Length: 308
Ligand code: CP
Image 1 (cartoon, protein in one colour):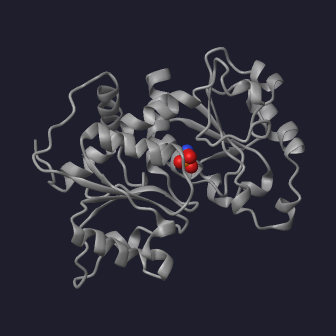
Image 2 (tube, helix red, strand yellow):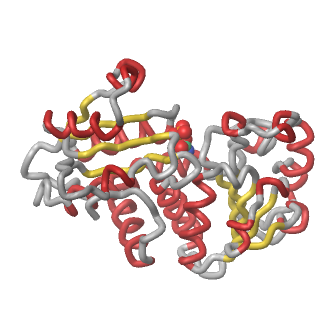
């Protein structure tokens, strides 16, 4: 791949190859030796802890040279466009840009260039608005695969703030292709037509006993504008839609719970469950480093940057 911006076009064998490569790195497999220095920049226009630090760790483990970039002190603040910023970084010699941006599909103008545009950088999407979160989705697939060894026939519930979630969108697309059965739960107003072709919307109490994977989503208060949502009660949400201790105890013995983070304790789930035996939250974060190494390597090789 020249860029890694979405999971939409990934084939199942590509997903499996990425998972195998990430597991290889996790098991201490040899780090590739790139024959030229490769420079990367991490540009986070939305806040991040896990994705930002994890990409930086992945870059360091791969031996890439990371150029610091802080949107708050950059010339973006003077009105420079994202495209012009990237052109400048390309001219300076940066090869790869890992970008998180609030605008859905911000990456289209960076990868679909017309004949007069000369931008020549690999773009890795670290999350675009409510669009896609490819690295989160692939690390989630790795975590599920490590647990169950397959996706075929697994029952996966995606619960919560669906409409605002790039994690829900990326995961439902990959999980469906990989043969899992998807269910949704949470408030009706966060389940729109878009989700219907991926799975049924049920009450959490009607599905919790049957699921292999319970994937909780963060309630994204910062993306809520509507009046119904501004009257949001975290206590009521937890009671009606959250993973309470009672619901946790009704889960299948070998089922797992996942959450992309950051967690709203006592909203999406009871605080006591964050480090409970079925929780894979920190495994997800650990796996993220290795999956991001596999993704960066794919783009480096796709762009013939660092032949072995
Ligand atoms: N999962 C995730 O994207 O977390 P951050 O926003 O902290 O990067």
